[in-house]
Length: 111
Image 1 (cartoon, rainbow, N blue to C red):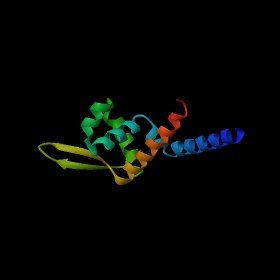
Image 2: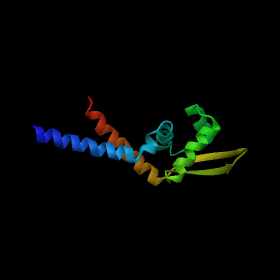
Image 3: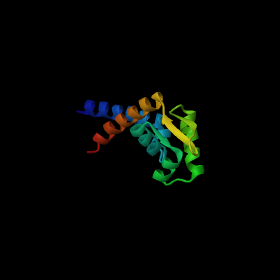
Image 4: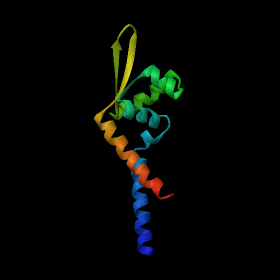
């Protein structure tokens, strides 16, 4: 029984390491940004700002961090007015899915 417990503790430690490795997307509001982009693939800057109730400067800060990690792209579109579109990248999708799967496993241990 001690062996099983030891194995479980090592397993939880490895999941904790995985979560910490991707701590940048686990932080609020970056998690919410990634979640919305995962669901919708792309969202306008103004819409993100409204949904997350962030100031333009605060949202821009978090988007720059995610862009630097190659999890999102940001592009300007000229329509009847200039728009900034934020899109999740393939890498962002993979990393977010892995983060969510790890969270599920960790949360099952506290049920």
